[in-house]
Length: 226
Image (cartoon, rainbow, N blue to C red; front, side, top):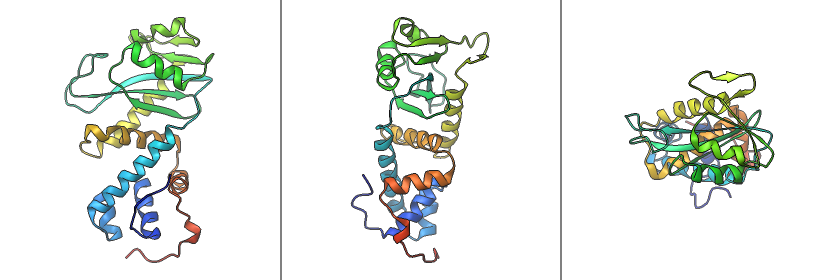
């Protein structure tokens, strides 16, 4: 895919990718690199577009998969499954020992969640959930279904969803730094969180993102930032 219609020189683009990976705000990155804030902001937006496109092409999950829904933003708690007041409902699937997949959803009903599970999880996989009623359909599906009752306990040996809940906690820490995200762009920021979780160390994130952006650092002559 790569960065398209970008007038910035290759060196500046690479520095902005580095700033993005390091979670440097666009305004600060613009000041350090010496460009307009709106230019840096647009470049960050393009990076999130590229990340989203690549992550949507990920292979289906298999083996042991944890699934859960969560709610982001807003200032008040709401009723689960009916869209918490002022919040954005999201759904996530995590392959144990592997990657996570997350997406925005309209609601947490079985009619909404089951098609996503079937699209992203291979048949015969073990699917771990909590006791939310929308997951009852998994009992009569092509998957093996295990559930944990959070009102009584959070883990019974391998029966838990601690991995996907860890992702929710990490994602909320990342998104909290942005001090408000327009709902129409929230899916891009969610994919940013998915990318950071899946590709681990900043060095690995940097290498992967440079490849996706078609930026070859070997061809770039080094020069001082300031």
